[in-house]
Amino acid sequence: MFEDFLREAIDYALSIGASYAEARYQKDSVESVMLKNGVPEISASSIHKGIAVRVLVGNSLGFASTSTLTKASVRKIIEDAIAMSRAASKIIVKGESLGEGRICRGSVNIKPRVKWSTIDTEDKIEYLRDIDRSILEASDKIGVKLPSRILTFEKWELEKHVVNSDGADVVHIVPRTMASYILTLYHPQKGTLQRIQELGESRGWEAVEKWNLVETLRDEVENLCNILLNGVEPPKDVVDVVVGSEVVGLICHESAGHPAEADRVLGREAAQAGETYVKPNMIGERIGSEIVTVVDDPRIPGSFGYYLYDEEGVEARERVLIGNGVINELLHNRETAKVFNVESNGSARASQYDREPIIRMANTFMKPGDYTFHELLEDISLGVYIKSNQEWNIDDKRWNQRYVGVEAYKIVDGEIREPVRNPVLEITTRDFYSSIDAIGRKLFFKAGYCGKSEPMQAIPVWFGGPDVRLRKVRISARPTQ
Image 1 (cartoon, rainbow, N blue to C red):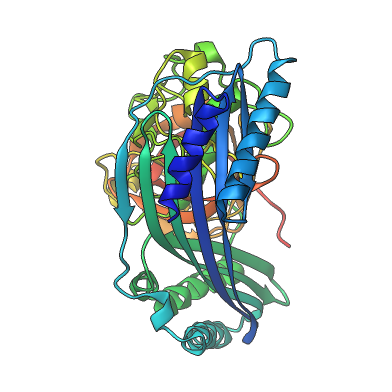
Image 2: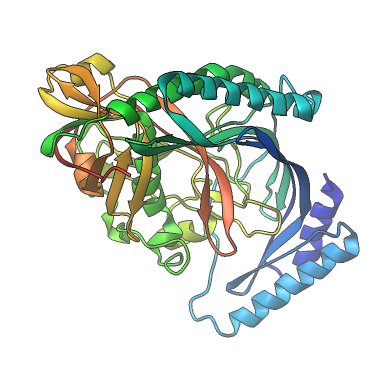
């Protein structure tokens, strides 16, 4: 993967004035197939590859990239990056420098059990048709229409090699597989209901085989039909609520992960991806109950956000964002680590070769507790179980947030009862984490792409968590459509 180009790039950058240099080769091979309402809509593939360099000259970092993989082109982008740094250093007062981190040499090579290339495109499309026929049959039997169905398989194979002047030399070869679906259900008297879901893992086609999507989606459609036809209004005002793992994972990503990005804390994302309620002096401040711990960990085998070394060659580790209810640490690259006088915790990621590494999450989740699902319910006299999510929003500082359940049920005397339609949990970040008094023992994940920066970088991540119980929170209802 152009090892000689990368090492020569470092030597050349140092020889013409850089005090630090890094070079990264990255190749992203993407393939997708889509079935829309039973008709193949997309069957496409693309390859995006090139080399990027980043240099530190004076007190400024410069970045440049090229898709022309020649020594002359690589030298040209190094010269451009250094010229950029020198120009910026003349007008920057404080400037930038790099902190410490555990710089590594190593490689990751995930070998899929079933390569995507061994499955014909027609076979992939036929599998999507099998899913489509199954869910149509299930909804027709119940008397609900499925007028809009979008089913997708996607492959994203990553090859990446990072070298820098501080001794890093790391390689990642990671295949990723994803499936997604958008389903819209309709009944003339009951209105519409929509479900959006994404699955993803760092492995080959065997992930699709494991998901058993024909049966899984059929079961889900049957449950959604029941919600649409028989769902009642949720109990209003203050009740106990069991929040399902899918919603918990999303909340952890949005209200613990994003706010802990150190570049946000420093105000550098305000005009692009938003601000944060977290201030530099809030490390050690209580924000939740003692049983709540939220972490971000790239090292989970098979996870969609998997990596062992970041784009600065720093070894990845578990980052404890909230530890026993207390804000514990931020997500750092080497630049912000220097500002906060800590070591980088390996959070620098770039979505493609022509994007600069910035602070990103990987797999953000709440640590499980020791309650069974039955134990979460057993002493609730009246409440709501919000199993999955259909709509959400959160304010710019990641403090006030709102989640509308799609599959949800009443809880009466410790048991799941009739389905509930459109329950709304509207709550602040502190109130959510502080209201949790019990956490389930089973941990679940869903996949997605997290967007940030300008130009946009969509990065693969997992959202995760167990089911949790909230005491005495306010529930409302969104009007039925």
